Figure 1 (cartoon, rainbow over the protein chains, first blue to last red):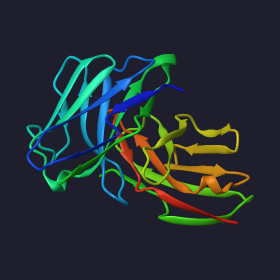
Figure 2 (cartoon, chains in turn brown, cyan; figure 1 turned 60 degrees about the horizontal axis):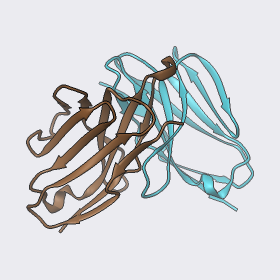
Figure 3 (cartoon, helix red, strand yellow; figure 1 turned 180 degrees about the vertical axis):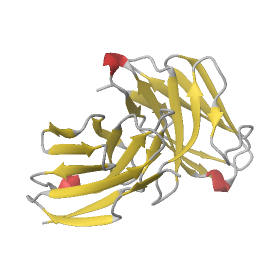
Figure 4 (cartoon, rainbow over the protein chains, first blue to last red; figure 1 turned 180 degrees about the horizontal axis):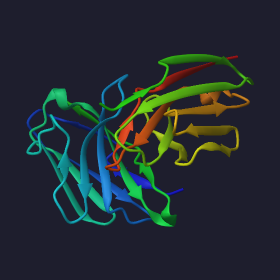
Length: 117
Length: 109
């Protein structure tokens, strides 16, 4: 199946710093990518929908100035957590929407574990 | 509102068969997905149903009834490595995934 990569897989940072997470679709073009956050033992929560060439659409309660999303190309979306705080520590997962073969599927990246000290 | 329901936890025996049910109420329907998620890892795609009926893929099968808002994931010949959470997700009319809370499946020897 299609492959989505995320980098970095783990990051530890100090409170107040910014962290950038990259999401790449490796063998297909993704006009739409999604960013999720998952706290321990909880379901995935959609943070925002990233559309190539346009502004991201954020879910209610997600601060767009804190979680900056840039979908610069058909294979790359980035999520930047600005001025990170300990409460931002979580598992961040991206997914890319694959519309090839006329069959809608989302493929997930492996996730990025963020720990803010 | 939009709602996906699935059992919180199930237990089954190695080598047996288990069925994980999912019921949904969403604004529009563009398919139902099942994902497997091992602890600490991202979900892995298992199946996609958009038409009624059964889709079989090896030891895993997924069934959909759109009129009933119901799906199930059937796992046969259970192996210890199948111990994981199984997530049901429905794609709504805006092509966004609405997620269930997941079913934790525990396999016993």
